[in-house]
Image 1: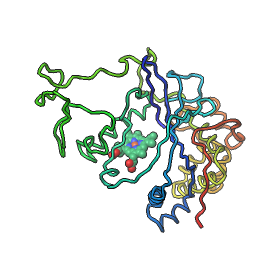
Image 2: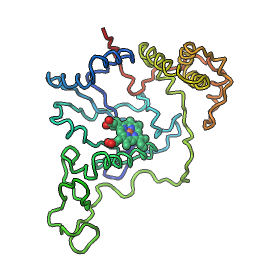
Image 3: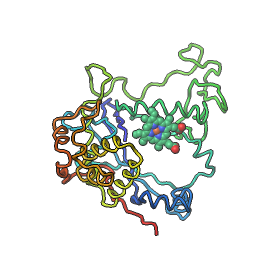
Image 4: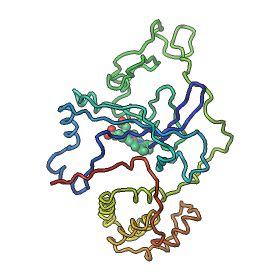
Length: 340
Ligand code: HEM
């Protein structure tokens, strides 16, 4: 989803996207089936997980990465740091780096699950942030919330402690403080740095202070130029399985039926911009045709490329996008589980 950077010992960086691929495959319900299941078994998927682990059938996920050189990539028709985009697999192949196995359930759900604190700002050596805007937003937000939700000393809880390193900080006190992470020989009365009286010393950074490409550019606050809002969405629609398309259309129609006509029209316009069939099917169910919406101007914040302008002028008559040889990440076989 978000893009990080990998940094090697020489300070060279690569952009990286992570993907977990379930070894047990992907099996999904339609919205209707999901509602039927939930009516009879509350928390069906949690139960499924507990039961499988109890039977000794440990679920596994292979961790893959996609790598890209750390630059602007003008050759791509999307911004590599735009997290609404995938990196096509035939250009950026998935490389397997490991496997995660869930081999036990928490002994205490509250202590080990409710109080766990995951966040995008938790890094290991060799991993760094990219300029992915949403990643930057998420990174301060998670720990901020966790200090409030779990408590200021949430990192001292066993479930949140670093497992393979000893942590020494100058952080002290606060609600539920349960220990002081003094370094061996550290003067316990000094909790600031630098000090000549024996406090903690900042460790040497494992990575270079200067890393990645040299950038000489203007900092701005504007929208990214290559938004390419429709192409990947249209391709994804075409690469979906028939039952997934049917369910997507049914869900969209169900939600849009409750909206005002102008919202319905705008959404049908967007779907036509993605893919003719998609706009057609949602439009048919709502009583809106391509002719009805072809005259809509782009949104105020949108700058359509020439190709997109042509698509808009030709709305509903563009023909299917060419997806030959295209593999988009997470376009995995998705088995439809039918509820009997
Ligand atoms: C790609 C987009 C995002 C994904 C995939 C994502 C995913 C998640 C997930 C899986 C959780 C945990 C939910 C749970 O434990 O039940 C979560 C929680 C949270 N997310 Fe996001 N999120 C995204 C975007 C954002 C953004 C943009 C912000 C804020 C700027 C944000 C702020 C938070 C916060 C504050 C929490 C609660 C953290 C905690 O209390 O532990 N997320 N998110």
